[in-house]
Length: 329
Image 1: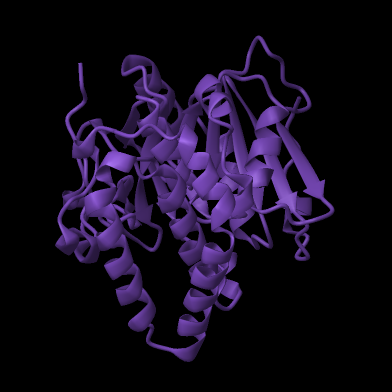
Image 2: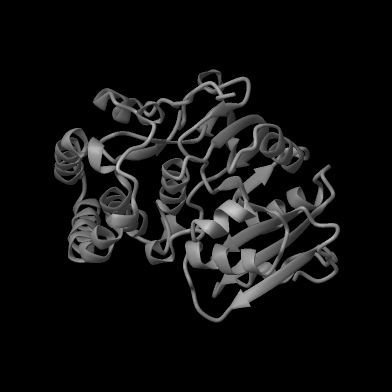
């Protein structure tokens, strides 16, 4: 349990996983400390960073810093940090995401009003807040996911709470009982697509994911992983394949499988640089070689899900538009 916290007072544990976050982490922590919602505790889990940035974290009884001797990856670190608390809600926040003061207040309110299993934030581009960084994660029937409305004008986003496929874990709230029942984030992914996979499993279980546009964060994006050549492309390609193998319902496969094959070939062949092409091909190769556990786990996947939550037009993959539905009553 974080120092200075108690089970009686903390409704939310805010988990911030860092890896060489630089100066961003202090701005992120400051934004958490400024929240108008007061029933929270926070854990900063540092994944064996070498920049020592977390050492400058301010002293606050609600805040704990955990320095892992090894880099566990984003998914495993989130799961372990979440287990350090018993708060009924788990908020995940990237170290380069900076929430408005009422962020937690809006997320918790939406979770309670709509009985949501997960609630996503409206993410704005940090240096150009007139553009969206994302309005929820979208999933196409081809098995390709994207942040809805990425780098499109804010007017593309919703003005009131809506249902989405999945929240982006850069700034999201999860009900602990749902999070733990579904096994949390998939640790074998290390990072990338783990939030999409969890959203998929929430949808398959009949759960509900909400986007609350009044819960606003400004996000830089890939502040750590972009420093490593091919890292995002490799893990994104591999984990996309694994997500499709395990989660796509059987009754959608006659349409989903050929679309997934064609889209994957298109992505692999249109790589514009040798580095990009190499990372994507290695991701696909290792994803295919590691297919057996995911295919065996399909026996636990429902054969059907609500098709309207998916994107069906292949053109929408390129357009990256947000996809959302009116909230079911």
